[in-house]
Length: 208
Image 1 (cartoon, rainbow, N blue to C red):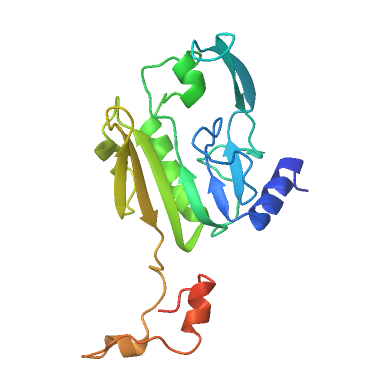
Image 2 (cartoon, rainbow, N blue to C red):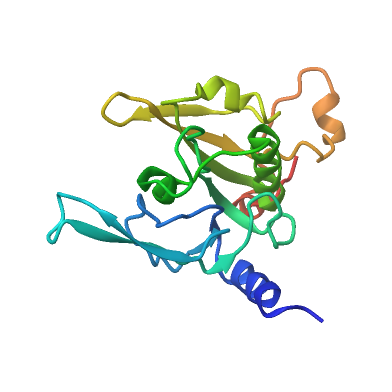
């Protein structure tokens, strides 16, 4: 018999096309309750953090995911989402109970294996033709060392932040397992859009 969290995970994946695999307090979202998105995090907690820029000198940090789960073992079927956001912890030297640790999370233990499994899980639940956005702050660990943890090839990226240390990197899940059509193997083949291909493409179906 499925647990309440497992059943909620299944229904959530069926109803929404976007996954934030480690949402934290949803800081960069325009709409923190975006109905298209399923927000996941291993934490479910609230903290009051000092903040001199806020009225009263503090602000509340709320981590309240739709589904509480670890990104190394996502409770969703394969190929469930069209778009996945992967923004894992990126600091190794900040204590888990520090202001930064509470806000962004902390890397500990065999974090390389954790991130390797996280990448694999995010691509597992991504539909063929879907996109993944990976966010990484390189204040402590260069982004190149992190990209070595996945065999997937990034498409392009962008740097942001005061010192351009935050990287936003885009991936796409190609239909690598789909067999090539027989005609594509012939010399001089030129691809054309065949009847049904446009409809299939609009539905995200791999047709090659």
